[in-house]
Image (tube, rainbow, N blue to C red; front, top):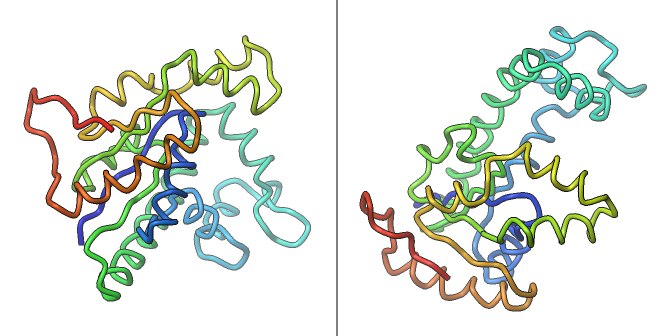
Length: 211
């Protein structure tokens, strides 16, 4: 089974495009969902987190207090690396199980939806990479409207990520999303058809396929 990496930037439309792919019957493995499941109450990974960070990161029912954990790791890069060293292997194991399940069901293609695909080196673990792209100013405008934040706050969030232009430069396929969601959804079927017909990684120095 071919595994296609799907990524983008904040407010670029990646999640909306993933949903359009799902509506067409394409399986999409959600890295964020797997990461949440990896540290559910009672899991070995959550016990590792508790051992590493103490009971203060747990809620009253023994579940991970995500707000406390997020505040801790965002303020301390070393703490973030420690958390990633626990969660990432658990997610990789879950992805292996899920890809095996999908292959056994007869799927020849699935997508792996990962916000930090390039940042975590997972672009090397997939067969090719699709980036959902929106110009930076469009990202900022959508962020302000979606989250009710100021321009300065939106700029700060964008500055904390790998620039969308860099992701597009590294991609094998770029899906442009500078219009509305209906226009974006219409691009899912042509992309799926091309992938099923053999669209693969671009050659060095060749341009990305664009939709």
